[in-house]
Figure 1 (cartoon, rainbow, N blue to C red):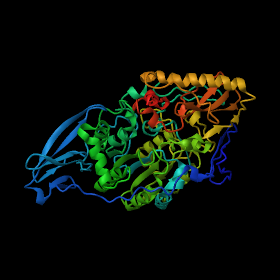
Figure 2 (cartoon, rainbow, N blue to C red):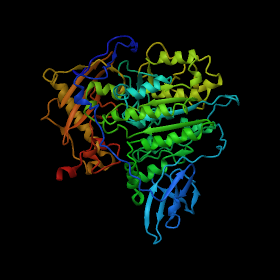
Figure 3 (cartoon, one colour):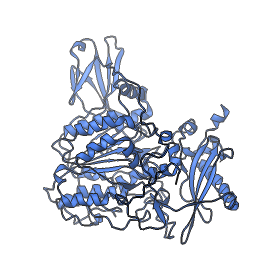
Figure 4 (spheres, helix red, strand yellow):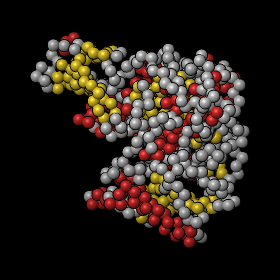
Length: 615
């Protein structure tokens, strides 16, 4: 472990690990020399809101021209339809004569003076109330499985804060956690990520899938092939598959999807994702307009947030709040994904604690009848902290809290199960099983008799995880059991650092194959033409470190390397045959080195643009 790790060793509230081949290397929230890694006092500059809209206002579903402007301006709004991740169509443009009903959640409003000169425009984000949704076929349910007509439909709200680890939530969100815990929230300490970034993890908790092959480097069991096999998941549409919120929609829930990133999760960087809308309310059109900057649309959206002094993500939190208020008497489900809150800077979330705590306190009455999930997709991964053993552990350990509905807080069996499971090893696939249980089998029995249950009996799919509402096995499940690649496993093999002097042949061989393997990544997406070949940065201390773990049937090498140009920091794993296992992981920021010449390739993390050398 790192010198900056204050190791947690006491047994209370700690996982029971019977696997002698690996350890859960937990460190206390504040590492030694923590001010080197974190700045809890970071504050944004003071901001005074500016209102540049003198022309109209929006109330409920209606836009009104201000009385003093009615004779001076003409306004209209345009609604768009996303055909796919690359194309968008105008649905209609509506003239606003004093007032007009809004027919979309993302209207682009433009106002012109008497000389037909545009004086104001804005791309609004409005929650317009829908009539009762059209009943859909419940074709995801297994033939023969039925639910009572009078089943109690509890709401489900999933709030994802990108890059938030369990321990960083303990550092940065004390006020917010206090509010959530006071209202019945239960933190689950050992959620294990199943991939590097948000996409493979979303595959788990939203689709019941895993997208990386899973190898067993301790017992040598057969490799588990990912759910797409040899296909690239990026090119396969997700519509009408196993998306959990599609199931909620088909069960009569009104569904919201809100995301503050410019691209939907499953579309990054240039993937098919969803062809059709999968929710009744969404930010999808707004994300498209941000990404492709249609007639200056990106600047319009960014300027509006700046004028309102919004922190990253506060615009979609308002949208989500309007959703909660609008549908108080109907079953609803939502996915709110805060991508920008701390993705690029681990310190940014500290000053948001007050806002988030007040937000959840203010809306607690609207969440009374809900299962509320507040979680990370993975831990922070964009800076030097991830290069440490502590940071590596936290990257694999996203935050997770579940708050049951108020009327179930007295359910001793349910709450007892959640508390027992709070110190057990869980996966994103378990979250999917939990969301499915909340929708189907749990309420079927009024959340009583919560014995272990195979949810594959409910749907036309094999459910890979286990519901957290029910007892999990007493014995800790391995990452192999839970379809988690070993390189992201919280229970890490017991490595020993090899001496370069004593193990020169191993070092030489691994240096050779590592450089060959990392440059091979540049053969994808024509990166070789625009990216420099990488070499080891011999002039930097600890530019190449090898650790070894010798299991019963296998030998595993963990390699940490620094490359040039650019001081790229990487981690990779090799077997006893010096064969690369899965992907090479980037452990420091690369945007300013790679996105100068390529912003979309998933392999850009290995790129140092040639143009930077020329300049």
